[in-house]
Image 1: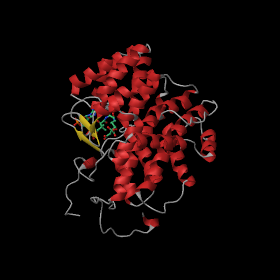
Image 2: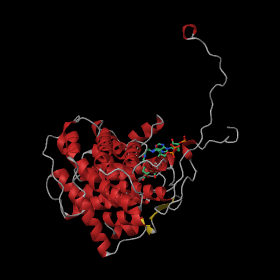
Image 3: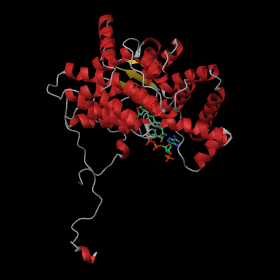
Image 4: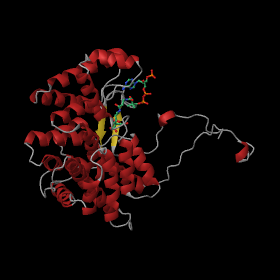
Length: 377
Ligand code: SDX
């Protein structure tokens, strides 16, 4: 393999695909979904409009949006075999692991791939996107010995999710906050889970396999799993009655990573973190959790002063979800509930212009060793 001498560890700087789904300007801290800045979408869009945008590269007109909402609502129910699994699996399982298994199970109840036209892919994307909130809420209720709440046949994805999770209808503000979180997490270039999803698609495997693999990739603490770890860190500071500045300095001294900070692409503040920061401040104050927000600000300043690193999307989303009364081990599931729109958009894009993903590895082991019989080793 001498013709491939250079390894870009972590594939840093490698451009593997072209995409119309999103653009990140890491120097300026700018994020665009299919032409629209994240600020424009955060201010004006709904999650359902963002789904349409990521699947069709344009915004829907009124009747297209209404048709998409109807289709999503119709697809919210999950097969009874999946409900049985959610009710009977360990109550102590990691929700992301349960979500991964349940999404994989869904494929058993969907027609086998016969045709690969866009309509067929879109219907699958709609079905998976509609069912993920139901799975997350159902498992959370089952593990807490609460009756599973059936999905509603109206209302938004955000409203329905909070309703199924809590067993009561959310207020306007809670629905809007959840909707905004879903918009902010929907798409982000060639992150590890989207890359995994496209690599699986490139083998001509099905969309369920791609999304299942992507959930597995998102689960890790270096990727989507960081939001839960941010909350664990804040809880740890609370339990130790520690000063957040000393706590962070101590961890940096021990060469430990501070979750929710740093990014491969952004060299400045992640624009999603900027929006979530404002939401975190407002919600924390309204719900009496301002201490957590103030600690977050102290941590942010310490990270900037000590090592010049800014927060990413996972940092302030933690306190936003916490203020909404959501269990920390569901935070990454909510990330998946949103990102499925981006994954499936990328799946369709990959399938329409496919080539097998098959990079090379530089072999660094021995060659031409002599065989030694087992009794002589
Ligand atoms: C997401 O890719 C995406 O787009 C992902 C995402 C999306 O929407 O899909 O944006 C969502 O996954 C956000 C990232 C969530 N992860 C974390 O918050 C975990 C903590 N962050 C880091 O481990 C790290 O910053 C990564 C994993 C996010 C990025 O890793 P890189 O690009 O491989 O960077 P690195 O680990 O090589 O860090 C470079 C330097 C190192 O110092 P030196 O060895 O050069 O002296 O920066 C330091 C690191 O030690 N550093 C940190 C740090 N992040 C980087 N030091 C302490 N705490 C951190 N969080």
